[in-house]
Image 1 (tube, rainbow, N blue to C red):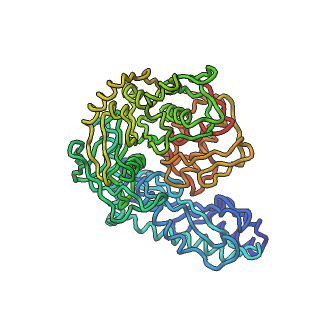
Image 2 (image 1 turned 120 degrees about the horizontal axis):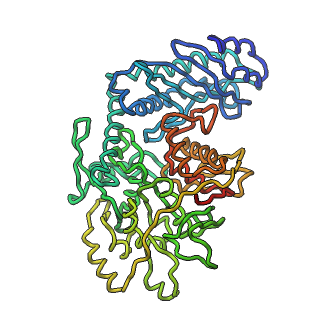
Image 3 (image 1 turned 90 degrees about the vertical axis):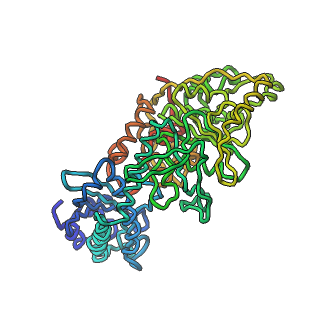
Length: 556
């Protein structure tokens, strides 16, 4: 499209019916070095807003363009724009969403998002900004002058104001990038120290409420038990100390309401890097760690759960287990195996959200029933280590688990205490019972999509997927590690892309798509990305694939 086309189109369609806005699709114009392009046009003032894309280049100090630091720079710019755009919206103009400018408000994690992309091209960093714009109308008649002001004055102004803060002497930008650098360094250091997670001293783990992002006021700062304290010298020049969680079986125990779940949730969230001031900037976890829970009634297709489920009624197969209505135990077993298949090296489980019979065995109950059908985590976790896997589990009291734990952390009034020595007492108790562990753990076999599953017009409402082509709604609330709505939408789109390909390996394709998302490459899931896409891990994508009702999988 030639320069100035947006102005020409708006002058031509001014006053016409709203549908004429479609002529803006693909039109662009250069404003003060910023190319403004309309990439998607809404069909009605009350419909989801149009998408506008801004492209520009900027030379940044070398410090900000090394390694993957541009992800943090883009995140910083995104946060500034998200706060500026509503202030520069046209107010009191027209109907519906007329005049509104916005983009998704980011959560406290730093990840690649489609709202702001940054790529190094020689000495210049090329930025792409995507935002929502409500094209203005009154009585469904186009307000050309207002649209012109919004697209060619207010949007470039917001971008220019935000870009002004991308300077080498901006302390906030430098601290934002330093925080990214530190967390990336800690995560790369974990394997060298044989740790699955690090919780820095002084971290604020509790949130203000269950669905809040903000740290709790007056919370007890985390302090590491001396026996688990490790020090890490960071590339930014400072040395930090905190609790290192060794590989293996880690049990988080303690009284109710004393911080067990809070610690586990912080560890689960530690797979992402956090912004300065979040309180969890120094909580860093193996990026593959995955939180699993029981999901009564979920869809399961050909998952090898034989390590965890020893037998089923009627002699049904546990090496290719399928059901349309999983129980608490079978759903948890399937979720663990699906996560491992997708690349998880650390499994996180909280007893509050898991079937208790999959956490530990009741020796006396087995004597009453005369049958043993499950091989719970207390039995398989020790042998999972032989497969390079670790388990972090919240369990207030389970002797079989404590006896096999490599680390026992007791939370008492939000303070951590190392109680690992207690495992020797637990071992004696088990021996007195005559307790015998079940068979060793084995990794699940890789699965593929048997035939394409075409699902059109799917709607994501909160954490639920709905669609006429789906046999049932899909509940994504157990996918707890996704922090924001764009991540949910992206995981769903990526999952549908995999489901529509017959014969592909679920884990391998999820890995491929996740790697593309890290590089701001959205071609596999959409032709015209809006501002509502964000990076997700392979395990997150596979989670959605595995719960699509009607999907048929088979073992390769």
